[in-house]
Length: 123
Image 1 (cartoon, rainbow, N blue to C red):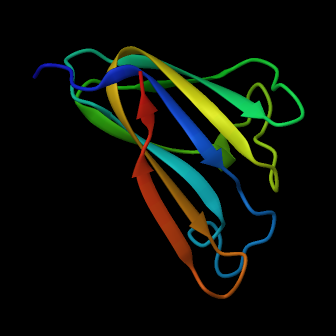
Image 2 (spheres, rainbow, N blue to C red; image 1 turned 60 degrees about the vertical axis):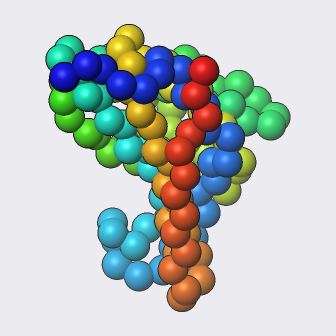
């Protein structure tokens, strides 16, 4: 199948609440990207994080196999450093192959569960 999508995606509305309610890990507040690779080759992702008051050291590196989808929780990104909880952040995702990126947010800071999803901005 032909690779669909773009190689650069931007997420600007990241924010992971410090507090969560309910059972872990399924009801832990989190931000996630779903990366779809429709192409015949695996792809290497570089995820660079931006904050309002500091720069993160280095980028996170992830592999997505050919013709697969991979869910990536920002909460699980720890190398080169974890995503800061309770701080607004943005992310630039660069890929060696064309991909499609969908951003989702689950907030469980109160007893009411909140969830949103949207496509990222692509270049």
